Length: 238
Image (cartoon, rainbow, N blue to C red; front, side, top):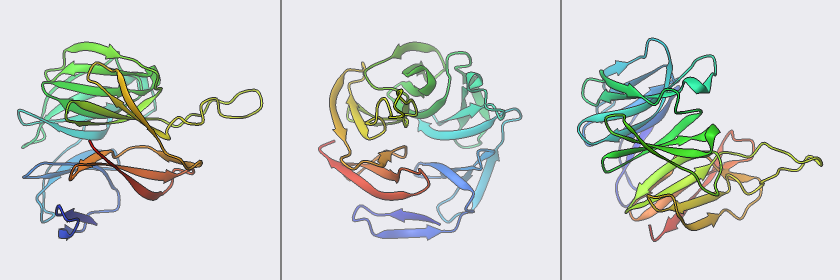
């Protein structure tokens, strides 16, 4: 079920979508939805499918809209070789590929954010952000005290970053960095840390789907199993 909410959080409209649909992006004309990471399709706001795109070689995820009628998505290898990750820029109207880029520069690409004429990409395994022009030119890499960046949200000249879950353990079987994925980092566009919010409850963490709504940063909170959402944190002052 897709529900479209007004600023007062009331339901403006809703329609059914297959349960297999995951990541979404939206503009004033279409909702873009990923289907089992196999293809992406555009839909009108009454749920009618308009067009779809399936890459002939790779799976697809993490759609984000950019200026100039572009829709960026992550392409990744079906066999799990994350060194083959790259970005495809699709025409937002026709979902036809315009160009693709980032191959050999990304390892574990996931969340992305468009900032002006640049695309910031979470390069998770390399513990960095990769920054490209919208035409696909690599401009710079950003690293920091955070690790395994997984999701990004851009609001008012700031980036909000969520880390991936820590899986490394010490000799006693304890997580080396138990706070990882319980934090939201507020960054300048140069990567400087301006603020850090830490979720106070152990066993709960942030993972993805950061968004700004009505002047608040909304961050879903997941159970430690990662299988379901237990709530949403709303941060004011963004």
